[in-house]
Amino acid sequence: MNLLESVLSSIVLSLSTNLDNLTVGMSYGLRNWIVPTSANFAIAILSGLSTWISIHLGDKIRHYLPNSLAGYLGSLILIIIGILSIWQTLISDSSETAELNSQNSINRLSLRTAILLGLGLTITNLGTGVGAGIAEFNAILTSFFSFCSSLLTIGGGYWLGKQFNQKPLGIELGLIAGLLLIILGGFNLSGEF
Image (cartoon, rainbow, N blue to C red; front, side, top):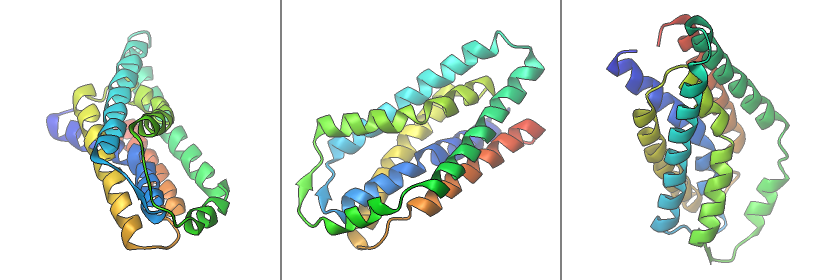
């Protein structure tokens, strides 16, 4: 991959794996919780760090596979995770939305809770990072963009949640994230990206 392809692939991957953060941020905004900058940074650091670790793990796995198989396997992992993301979104329970809208008290997201939340959000992205490592994504670029997109999606989601007191966009975002992963995997599989 040339530099432009690496940057574009890293941006698409990091945005698709952090779209669920937008929904999380919205849920806190809708519930009138305060999300301090330190909590947002803690989640973003965990996102970037887990991306870096999982890409390096995928890169190590790639060295034990034939070159042609490694690229295909990494791309297929991205496609499978995209399909699973769409499937999970379609079968998810909408009762969480009613619960979010029924809470009106003001609370503050603690740093400890943010770290636990960040760990939960990053665990779901580890498979994507391994697939990206096998597909030879640039670990530094992808980790940086993962950090940045996490900051933006949590912060942006929080802001949107404060602005609009309505149903979070979780279903639509889950579908978009899944489609982005499938498209990214398809481009990598075809050698176009």
